[in-house]
Length: 111
Length: 115
Image 1 (cartoon, chains in turn green, yellow):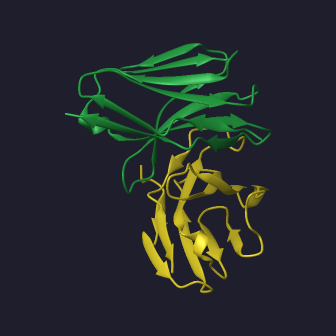
Image 2 (image 1 turned 90 degrees about the vertical axis):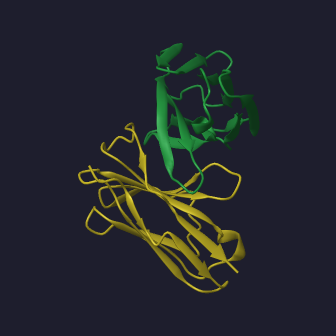
């Protein structure tokens, strides 16, 4: 099955850019997602990218996909304190499009 | 549009007791998922329903966990008997399509503590 790995923690200053990285193992993954989880809340879909794309931009969010290296990144421009949360990368694979989540990266934004 | 509803939000039980969680997906969503999220980890899929049929329960500990979605709408997840390692947040999600390749919308989760 799919394995998805992320670094555990990232700390940035307010106004700087944040880059959260993810690696996955299943080259047949059709979609890759980024979810945000705030304390005590469920997961909120932030953005996703199709496997035939290299980049997707959505307001302050930029997703880069390197299929050769099976590497996905999420860049948040002008990071705000409200961006402090845990960010999960997730890959979709298999006949029933099973979603496998990474371990999550905790983003801390310092005012 | 109402989101995915889950209850209860919190539950504390002693080991070897039973517990049940309830989920009501977004209206019209064919696919329903139950995930277990242990503290410090990402969600792990326990079971996936399409309408009222199970399409993936490969990671469900079937000796103690069971789930049903009898009318293809709401669902219950049961643990009997509970173990200490079952302490986690149980997340329910739903998606519109039957091929799974649709956005999953998550409920707020049920936080279970087993003492």
